[in-house]
Length: 143
Image (cartoon, rainbow, N blue to C red; front, side, top):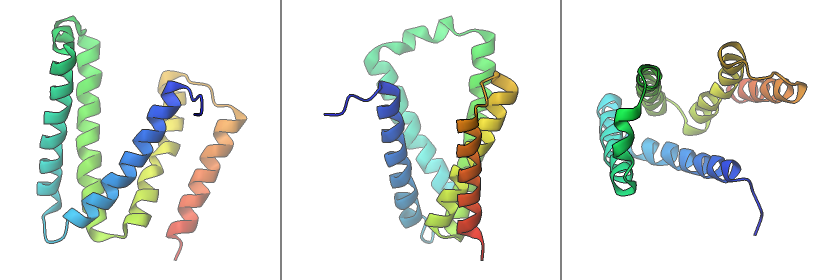
């Protein structure tokens, strides 16, 4: 078996499940309001994640979260919620292959924002990857 770093394995699994998310969502959005579909998805995610937290005993750590932890986790939740609402609406209106590629264009924004706010390095390799992702996105949506 390949000896992958654990972060890479988790990232690949994330990509596979993100692909399944798009396919299942598109199939499930037929004749359903996209906001309602997002709310159902969110409720299921809530149950799964809190179930894992309780099972592993991490619920005890809630009291140790700092004000900064709370602020950025709440901001992340707002961003996630808005992202999901817009994503489901886009899936309902467009082709899953096109919507998913545009959605993954968030990588370009993430690279830029991680440089600006987190001071992560912008290497030539990262810049080239961002450019290729952006160009690939343009090629797909160009009519």
